[in-house]
Length: 146
Image 1: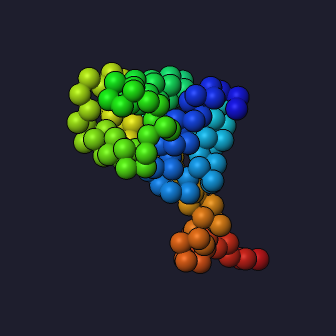
Image 2: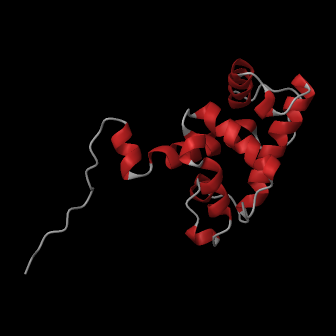
């Protein structure tokens, strides 16, 4: 990885997989890490679309750090070390802004960003669309006019 630390990658992959099974295999960490390294105007992350002020890595680091601090406070473990049931419970509480002592960007906003990133990486390709059982259909079919 070029931007994210190994610990951030581990948290991001575990969160992505909890938010959308298959996101880890689809490469959520590679996608986010790559996009954090491009010029802000070229970035495909939901953070840009949601008008987050660049550099976007600051928000991702703060959000992933808040996840880890809260997991340590609640479970004395890293997010990736939680059982699947604990991970789902944590994410549900984060989504509802119900984690006492949360310190970082708002949990529901981090949920929103990471969920969109997981969906983008899992289904934002022709193969991803086809994996849903829906044939890929281009939105615009060029017409030959000459």
